[in-house]
Image (tube, rainbow, N blue to C red; front, top):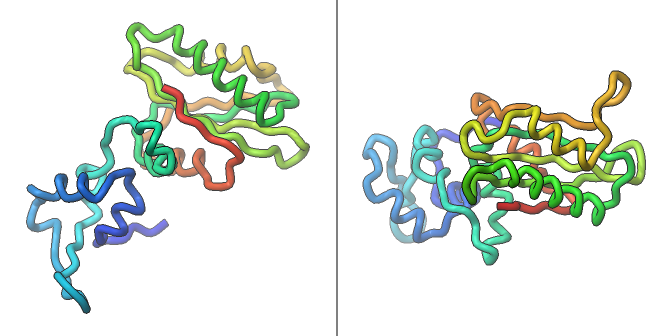
Length: 198
């Protein structure tokens, strides 16, 4: 995906989970070398902002309120995650998998030292080979709260463990060098159901 060098307000609101009011607040003290104006056919000139400062200005934001459900995918794609992966239980339908992922989240929560140290996003997708479903997930947690082995242990409560023949659990540290790629993949629009817990 090619990066657009200069972005309009519309581009920014299409990418980041912010309101017009937040956009206006965050551009108040913008570096003048990172913004420019182009003439508009009607009304005021159009402001453009350079791509190099977009994440710094707009990526960070508080958690979503329940009224902001429609912003979930934008929020997920711009959040900073620690782990990503997927889990493929033997024979789960959507309802069963929702129950399993909520149970998984509650088991992970038992490992936190203080409240609100854990966020889990999961999205359910149909298996390609059969009639059942699997889940992709992203985890944000307090530094050093979890290691991959902890997560795998808890996933084994809802899914058969990996064997030499079959890999049903995949978990990896989120490498921020890949930018938003993992979050975008895990939040593809074709998912059957998705939810943020925490």
